Amino acid sequence: MSGLVRKSFDSPEETRPFEQGKGKLDLVNLENGPVGRAVFEPGWRWSVHVKPIAETDSCQASHIGYCISGRMVVAMDDGEQQEYGPGDFMIAAPGHDAWVVGDEPCVMLDWQGFADYAKR
Image 1 (cartoon, rainbow, N blue to C red):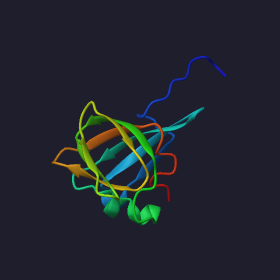
Image 2 (spheres, one colour):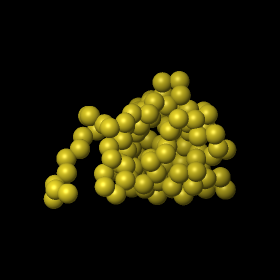
Image 3 (cartoon, rainbow, N blue to C red):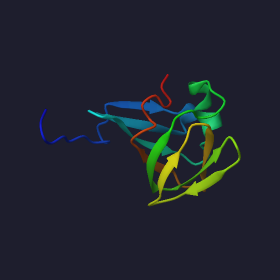
Image 4 (tube, rainbow, N blue to C red):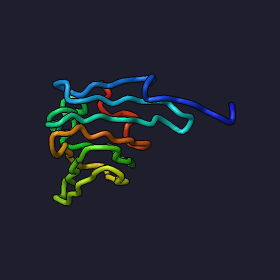
């Protein structure tokens, strides 16, 4: 394998749309696994726009991510919640819901939890 790799979210290897046109997940595949950039449109909520795809009661992905723009609240099944915004690093264990806050899309990078996220 080469010592350098170049990938771009402008030409992702896979795109997974969310329900009702409320955003999408673009993936690039690296040797250590996929990295995703998700755009969550205003009004997006995991329990409405991804739950029908995942077929689980809450999101069971473990996320390690970074918020580029917009704002999102992640609420754990036990009630703990945190709001994330631009420049915030995020770790979220399995068992949560999430939603966009405000009228700006939330753009997140995730290098752990998107391998099977919103996969039909």
